[in-house]
Length: 120
Image (cartoon, rainbow, N blue to C red):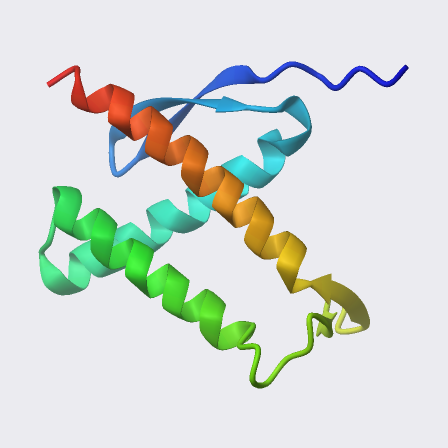
């Protein structure tokens, strides 16, 4: 019988604030990559707008969602569209799976952030 690995707590940092999130071991690297991407986007927006805190987080989320939707718009891309990997060769990109994984990560981050609110 296949036993999936149990989720573990992972400490992440966004804009100097630490959060503990639950993450399955097999998704750890993907989550860390997402954290790095979000942190970079937040830093970029903070430098341009002088925003911080919740407003910065919302602006970053909207920017990232806009970029994601622009890249995988259903009007211009099929459900599984070819994409280029780092070598420039075509690979299959499953936008539905990508959206599911992002939604899963966002849900975990929302849960962790909700728990952090009680700390303040």
